[in-house]
Length: 315
Image 1 (cartoon, helix red, strand yellow):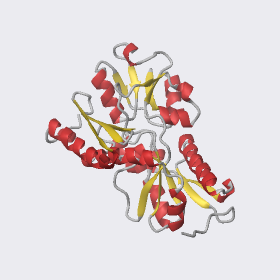
Image 2 (cartoon, one colour):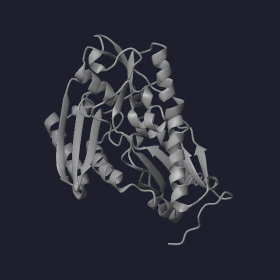
Image 3 (cartoon, rainbow, N blue to C red):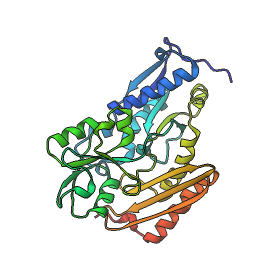
């Protein structure tokens, strides 16, 4: 296919949120596209779009609408033609997309682990009883309370810099961040220690960057095909099928991780009550080609084990 490549006079517009991490991810996307197509950086324009989730940081996401709050304004801008592609943290993406848009390009996945961050303590096991831990993630809250029900958990929203400021101000004694974000910001030293998957299974698609575009945009389709990372796509196909079958949202504590070994895929999944009082987990092994069905099968098995109405409980 012959396409008209972007130029400095008519750049490809890349939509993104405005946080330092979001901008780092948009810049990585631009750099990979520029290298893949031998184009100058000036052939791309990064367009910052403030989302509802960025504007309202004093309330939990579940109270103001969930994951879509970080994507709606960006997707609306793309459908209007104000931007050509959008760069997202995949763990923020709902499993259903607006009509007319597609999301099937992923960059190589970063470290999927969570990071324990504290200026006073060196890990979860050393936290004294009653210690205040901050997190905005229902998954992390539930996993933490399942492991240490004696701890106190407070709401802790904001970007990496905001959360570190809250730690410094004593709002909490510890918090969690994604190792992927710290690595992409060149701030991995912030992590007191990474948390093993066996201790805290990550959010579905954690560490992955996804790129969304209009289905009828042949230029974007062709350009993005050169930077798509197949292995990341294979892993996310299983994880997001697991999430979709569970009808997961920011209001439901769900964790999932797929790993590849040769032509085999290993999928682990976990569902929890928000207070950490109950936790169901399982795994599946199989062919990479069967990843999505494995995700759906694991979700159905956990739902059956948990019983009807498991996610209706809000505590």
